[in-house]
Image 1 (cartoon, one colour):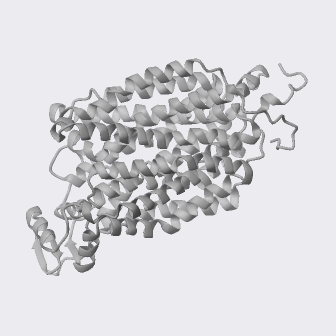
Image 2 (cartoon, one colour):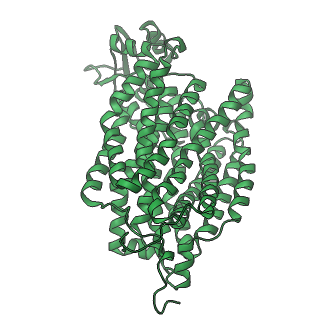
Image 3 (tube, one colour):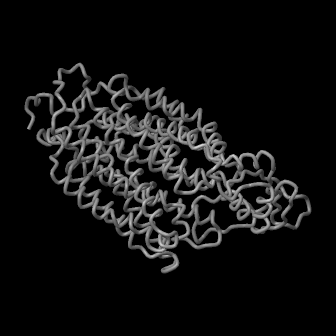
Length: 546
């Protein structure tokens, strides 16, 4: 592939380039807003769309539905990536935004479990699958489209605006939900108010389609189409050809997997940790995360700009490494500054669960069976309490024995367990008067800065790895496996790991291990890409080209 030694004009920032960045980014913000509405409300949806009786089981079910949208994203990348490489970038991400907006609007009309039983979560999962398919095609199209319009020396900066869209979409979802929840009584929001953020997406859809219809096709795609170089089989060329398939695999394991887990730890897992584990009220948690996003968002642009000067790979891998080394102290510090009473009670009072028939629950549904051990561990996990697992005494006829300090509870008994925790000083909720708001915000901003390091340069990096004829398909798959599978599965997997082990921090091992693997593979096998030529339309037509 040609390098930057090829003579290319370094154009000024043209109005067309600005318009492309604005229109592509705005539409992608709205699409991320649609996708993250459910993710933000996942703990809340547990009570709406799943049967009552086991709060952690319902929470895991809601997280599984949340994860379904992520798991299907690579398939969307294959479907829409192929269309994008065959038909064009512009029309493909017009289709994706319509699919996303329609599915999101439909969630706002969906009856709850109380009304139609198990049909409610089945339909909800189906709509999440549509959203995931759409997002699988959206990001690759937007990133490729902007990169193929960008000047060669400014590609990291231009595509970094696309990188802000996921965070801005998340921020927009937080703000809309916060407005609804704070202007309504809790009963009103539970009954019908939760639908409003989803229904609003219809107006965003109409505006996004209008904006995107005004865009022209990518100049690079126009060029390869004029030369007759469009791939006839982009899937085969991308993945059946080992030369390109190897790059796809290395891009996944050496870049996007680590980037994905850092992204979802620093934003979603941090949010769920504040609300579920540390018992901070949702309003304060939303505001804290929203402020961290506001402060952190300009750094997407900064690291994209910096990658044009010093390279993409080093910034991405440095972000993964620093995150892996600091997640444990950062989350322990969150506990210290958000809920010091929980920290003090945990240090003072030992808790153990001796049981048999304990199971590891990841995907929860009607097929799931919960033993007394599972119920006890689920309840303690839901209270944000760490515990150790032991064996039952020899000859014991009890299914589970929970020991909280000197209090021993034989068999599963929720009320006795709750009373014992209260007597031991474990708080039911975080006390706002004891929260160190400044330090909490600082910790959250630090984690968002890690996100900006790994995510700001990734679009330019992926675009530069692959040739134009199969770029949409090739870059979309590793991105959406890294973010949709490795990243999107993080809240579900980490929650299940915590419930199984009894350590509220144990779930952090998941992003840490993935990030370290990415650092090792990326360092050893991936090369820097910033000097590779993407704007093939700037190179004179080859002799004999059609």
